[in-house]
Image (tube, rainbow, N blue to C red; front, side):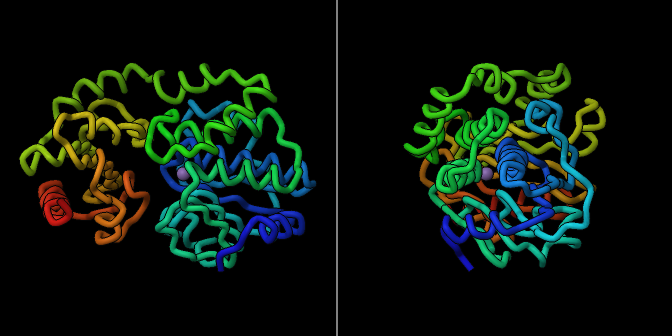
Length: 315
Ligand SMILES: [Mn+2]
């Protein structure tokens, strides 16, 4: 059932001992939503714990530094920034069918939770959580503001993607006025700083860029062997997807990452016109019009051919 702010407020004010689930391959928005919501719940006197199927990458330490939370038998299950329980990874089995409140901004949300606060137009789940906290009149601490800002900044590509709402700019402005947050430092860590391995990988990876369909489709595939060879962890490949649409003439870009042998996580980006959410839904995934994803199994050539066919139909 889809709900609005007042119902979400009632829910949060009356919940206790909450587990907040973030999606696997965690990004700035789900981590910001998870830890920002944990701060808000703690203002309400509610204990909470943030869980994720994968470890939180080091560059997000300034959000996760408050700790994932206490150990308790959960009474409340909340999911943030998760359109589909499949994205919970190992937590799908435990909590997938038990989510009581989902806060999300993906139009492809599967409506799997008892109550879903969905705002498809929001830049980030963090934007919804900020507005919800304002609606509730809960104090937003500086740490909470940093978390929520990070989600909005990362999901909007530092306020440069189409999905950036006027509200996202307003929230950043409000935060700039109210808190002493170093936006430049956060954005440097989110968008610029990289490991030596990553920098070298970018060089190698750009050599792997393939153009298909008369240059309208760019594919970047990274196998487990490559990751092993370069000493790179799967989570360090976050942020490569936008590179695929930097190639001139490209309309759709796909980053393929081999999660497990023969299992590819496919991250789609659209440069302008193509709805990649629709393509990904055909392949069992989903997401946003210009940024979406799915998982495809097979050997690398089979996977590529399947994706090329799917994009050809959509062009
Ligand atoms: Mn998000």
